[in-house]
Length: 459
Ligand code: ARG
Image 1 (cartoon, rainbow, N blue to C red):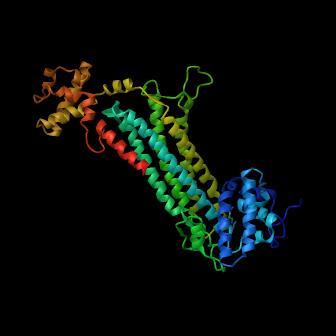
Image 2: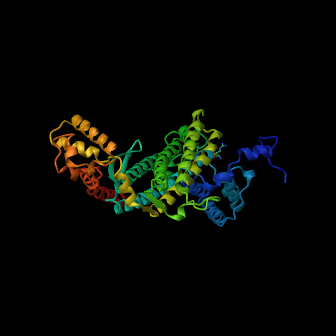
Image 3: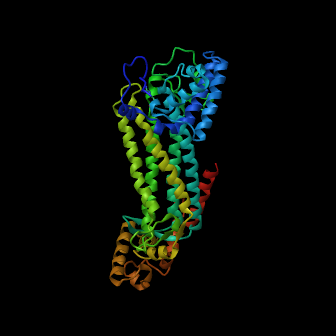
């Protein structure tokens, strides 16, 4: 079969290489069902406005129903020759219903069509991500509840700082993922506007009703400038930025999971189904899932940079450059969805080694700040208390013991204000329980925070 030229305007067909270079069908076919949804709303409006006949509209619907069936059954034949998802579907429609199919593109361009498809796709993707974020926050909250009283060392500079509860530590991630959900929701507001009707760039001469199409497709509003409508990809950048922050949180959590699972630390174990072995070292069990998630974060950041760079040099309005928005977007969506699913499963597969956490919290003078606070409450200015405790810690270091293991008389050498009641504040339990305010690590506060999160998740 001899290759056809684009139209009568062309004197020769494009080369096979150019065809392959410019085609997008092998990735944008993912938009097929959204493309059909958009076309049906467009046809419905064209008929309502008397731009096409009711009979044409019925034919278009019949043809599209069959095409949808063929796509869902995996029987649709995608042709590179037809460049992209839009032309493939339109060509098949015309094969099936004749002239009615040829009338579908009245008052429309692939430029506003593709922008509409991507927005429909992104809206669905965001809704999936929001549901999964809810699931992950729920799973982490369940684990936090089991460990509202489990004490571990809290770190700054990766040095033991103060004791915290493991539940409190987990809830820090629940907060992060809550902000991620907010960012996604906010992005969704700007995704959910209709470009269709902008046509190629300037609008159309037909008496279209854009608000009607917006309503049919569930958009909150139309894009109010036709040039902007076809060339705006801000929403894709915003989405990828929100996804990058989300993955950054996943990556920080991954880093902790990997560290905690190291036998040198031994705070947790991760269920075997999330780990892999070594082809040479028979003893190995590696936390591949969090490591890979940490790695995949880089690839999502890359997509953000890619999209920003894609847009920076484009004059108004549509340029073919925009076709390059899809693969980074699709890959970002796939990566985020799979990562959220696997992390939600994995949360339930974490075994906590509370004894190891406790033993680690007992090292490194985690309650030194409590001793300083104790002295302040006895009347010493904080800076002086800080200095007195620093001397005590230094003496402990030399003696090789913990603050709580020092005899009262020895402690009193650092401040005469120290009494027998000091030992209550030097315990890990006393230390965490004393941080009893909104946002504090006290088990009581952790339980309140869990209630608050559960309220959000139910809402
Ligand atoms: N495949 C194109 C894209 O993804 C559709 C729009 C093409 N429009 C055009 N005038 N070449 O952006």
